[in-house]
Image 1 (tube, one colour):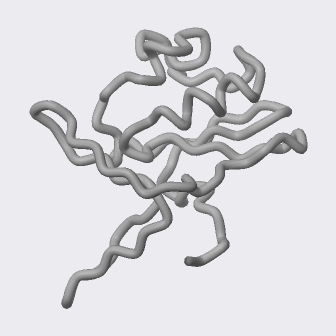
Image 2 (spheres, rainbow, N blue to C red):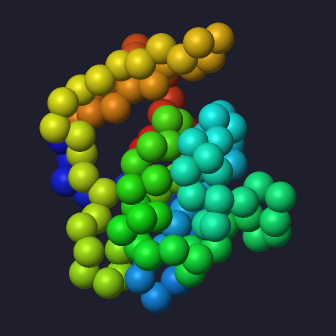
Length: 119
C-alpha cells in the first residue's frame, strides 16, 4: 500500500495544539460519539468549537481518535510522538442498525467507480 499517511483533506476542520493537530471530516462522521464518551474534555459536542486539542495530553487524544469508527477524526503529531499507524490486522465490524466499520491495510476497488474520499 501507499506509505503516505492520511492527514486530512482541505475540507476537514483542523484543531491545533503545540503537540498535535486534530482533523475532523463532518461528512464522514456517523455520530457514534466514541470520542465524546471517552474524552469529553477534548470532544464536547455542546461547546463551540467542539474540539479543544489543548485540553488533554497528546497521547490521550490519539488513543481516543483511534476509537473513531468512521475515520472522521485523524491527528498529526508535532511533538515527536507516535503517529497514526495502519492496523496490523484487517478487521470488519458490523454496527447494530448501522454501518460496517472496516480497518486495515486494504485496497477496495470497484469497476467504473470514482473515488471521492479516502482515509
